[in-house]
Length: 119
Image 1 (cartoon, rainbow, N blue to C red):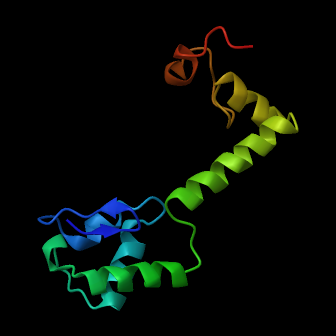
Image 2 (cartoon, rainbow, N blue to C red; image 1 turned 60 degrees about the horizontal axis):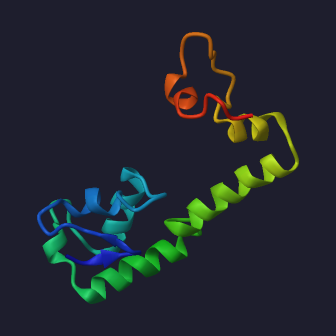
């Protein structure tokens, strides 16, 4: 089972779908990356050699996309900044309420359920 950017790619799964499991890479982008790396549409994880995995990693680095832990860190820093400067969105994040204007009277049970008494 080869690892690409810290994400395992199962041997029996189609490679395009396996690459799309990397956080920040969708199905379309993974198809483009696999095509550039020289994999066919029916390539599977078992066909990935260490050289090909390094080639895929270098192709991802060349795309100027934030992926994996870097993307998660970037998103968390944005949310943390909103909380620090006490914007409306930051306060909603801190309280665990819906952020983008959804109603809370009858919906949003998942966001509210765990944080009922948070002030």
